[in-house]
Length: 255
Image 1 (cartoon, rainbow, N blue to C red):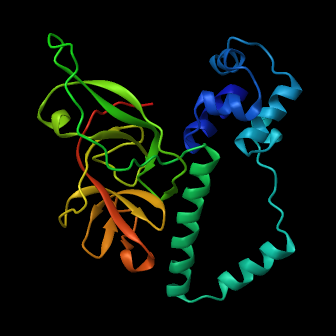
Image 2: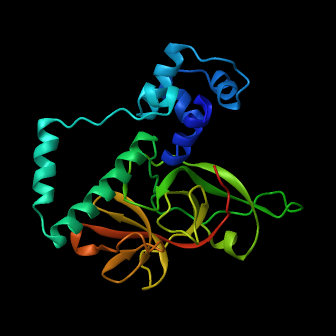
């Protein structure tokens, strides 16, 4: 495996786009694209170091494919000793929290943010009757299909969609991040959402819990992922909970 292939492999594993890697490393997007396509022979040391730092991996691994031996700090060693002293229940609890926090931090490292709008009016049909298109608000930054992500802003653009029964009901659209709603919904899919203050058990919705945004199936007393690798999240673990809308469909657009 070559340098560029190892970079692409890590990008895929961590869900990092070329644009995000370019911004994090300071390498122009065009230069990065040529490097990853293999059209550039040789890589400058400064470029390789910047890419390794942005990807959170070692320069040695990108250059040779060999992993550096892991050395534990005193604090990490103490934590490992405590973990090994746990019973099966304690280990499962720690594993669950570790996985949830890892997914949250991984999302933050990709500059992923949830944008959940305040209730807004139903979109109007555009003037272009021939095209039979609608314009609806679109929150391009991603809504989490894994661990909830902190809400930071409420800015939306408009997108044009083909008029049909679902798009006529949609009050806004959001993009999915993560794999916890697979196999039905995938990372990058665009959700069509209808503003609803309540949701029936078993329906899919957008929820705000302690200021964090979630895309999940409502279980009455918990939020449920369609991917069975993810455990249900009890609503009792949150101090506040509200529904922002019912997911009525998807545009299945990736990006």
